[in-house]
Image (cartoon, rainbow, N blue to C red):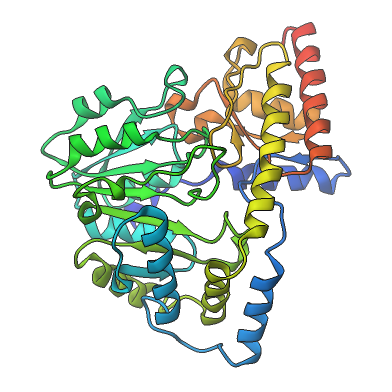
Length: 394
């Protein structure tokens, strides 16, 4: 007997971060000390008042089904928060709460993209974008993020690649893996190019609270773009709630109803006690977020300076998120083999830039969501392993 497997399953990709994590854990099981810079999640505990809200919700019996689009109290809190932070009008009916941010990507692409439709997306970029576009039969159209543009979108390339088949533009700012951020001028120019076209913008703003100095800008705040933009955001990064699985999308027009229907057909609803913890996150004290970002800023400075001090490494200063994306082309060899070398020879788990798209070749991604002590150790190990590699011409 041969069990059926749909052809479309072969079009799904994965995240290299989890593959590297498995290999790193295997080395640790052998007694090898590994410093983890591969996984993109804050190493901070969820703030205590959020945990207490979740525990109270459980004790109060918030353990049953809720509405597919989310609890009204959380949808209202999200609408108020997004309206204030993006300076746009948002109605709670536009909000759909999901178990994490990925369902917003998946549902938006499922709801909007037909086979053959073109989706413009960043390269390097979060690999799940292209994976999901391929899965539904769409055509990923990469937009190269270049180091000489501070890993920001090339507006001329975007204009040249817009066609009558373009149906979606995916933006991610602050950006994974590059740590870059689009400026207000960038977003104004992008809006000028896509406004009024039959294109929806999926604006992945999961790192919206994670900027250094310059404020976050959303394309939804550009004139007319709120009616053409899906905002993806959530709680995983800002509130160190990756395991809680809580995200949301803000959708234009009637799209929220369609996405709520997808929720009904897939997850039924997001866990109710998790949603009540989300209310506490948005409406409670924000000092833990500010403290976390102050620490990330210290780590960013340490990592950027440390990488630039290693011969053959060159790293731009990240503008947001908690990722460094150093150029290692001077070391020779492809980035996947380099990542393997530094894991095996230095005990530092990091990611190949090519895992984020063809334009990521020649780069490595490091998450500095680790302690200052561990980051200093990692930099020392990378420097030693780089020198050893050069000495042996590996």
